[in-house]
Image 1 (cartoon, one colour):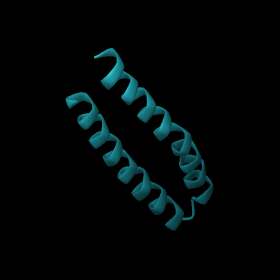
Image 2 (spheres, rainbow, N blue to C red):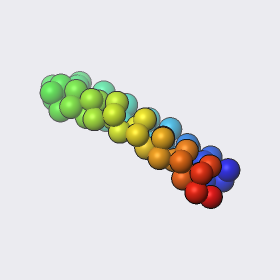
Image 3 (cartoon, helix red, strand yellow):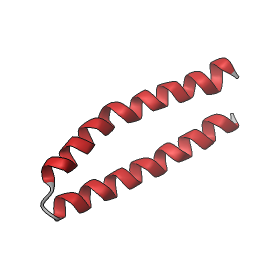
Image 4 (tube, helix red, strand yellow):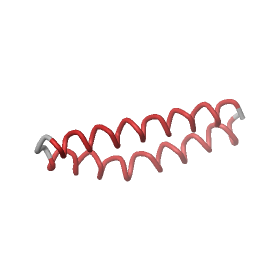
Length: 60
């Protein structure tokens, strides 16, 4: 359970960082880069969450 809670907390923090980063990039006129980061995050975060669940509850 510690692995899951720690991993979940890290994922929430990374989502916050991603949101702030893409917002700052969009404000500075780098919308293409912000959209690319956002699209990668849409695939990356759920993938990491699934791996986290598998590691925390299946292998431990």
